[in-house]
Image (cartoon, rainbow, N blue to C red; front, top):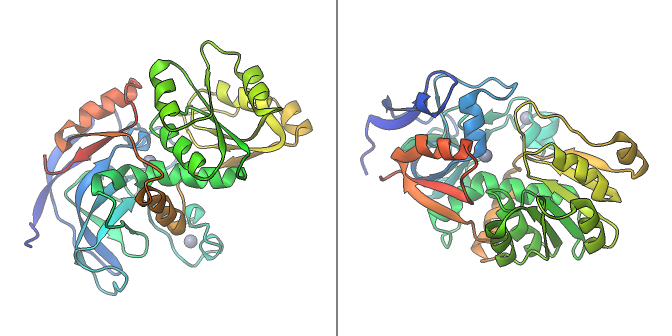
Length: 349
Ligand SMILES: [Zn+2]
Ligand SMILES: [Zn+2]
């Protein structure tokens, strides 16, 4: 196949609103040492992409930036020193673009906290372009049985939920409580939790969300608008959840989580609303001996395992495919909280 010199990419030059995103012609990059060029076929759109656009976080963004970190495509060119991947391989481009491999964290396979980490669609250009550079060590091989459009949302949302569930320490048969269970991350978290033999309390609101999480076999649904969340979780779980995965962007979720958590359990923070602080009562955190643990994305093995659950039919991302050109609209919908599941962009359109 011939690789063009130039391509269309969704670029923003300055932080701001979705109208700052422009489709521009940019050069196709040349893969360097241990890098591959990936022809992106599909890419998910994650809330983090919106945070990067808005400049919400205290972590510098490359500018101008091509966002996107849920890419799925095909390797079309390999740079010098690439042994692991070959042309034609189907790979995922995820949030973790690369890590140094040599620091104390990388040596412990905690590569997501490597101080030299590079992030796709944040510190380096990401998947909102037809040809994207990926690190050959970190790009995730996608099993043949998993369509690329299905793999795309797994590359951030799926890996993130899967790793966070591991961090919760909840054992088979124990209760995991998931505030925000009906959202883009939540609907995957419910499925991974069930596949990992956990019992699930899903917290969200409305009949649509209830139907969605029940279709993934959540054991209990708690409506935060109409139910007494703390009392109901305690009652249904016989004394509190063994672990809580906070995927809701409401700081109130943390207060409630500290109240319904089983003594000795872990609360895992995943959602990162701009400027939010942890609002849990320190008295209860202390006397219940609760652990609070942050978790973002996962390491290379988490990525492979997260895709394997999908390949085995245990987890099915809920998504809608739209043309690449609709990215600005997707940001608007996301900003208004109007997206159910995930939106996956088709780069061919
Ligand atoms: Zn993401
Ligand atoms: Zn490192």
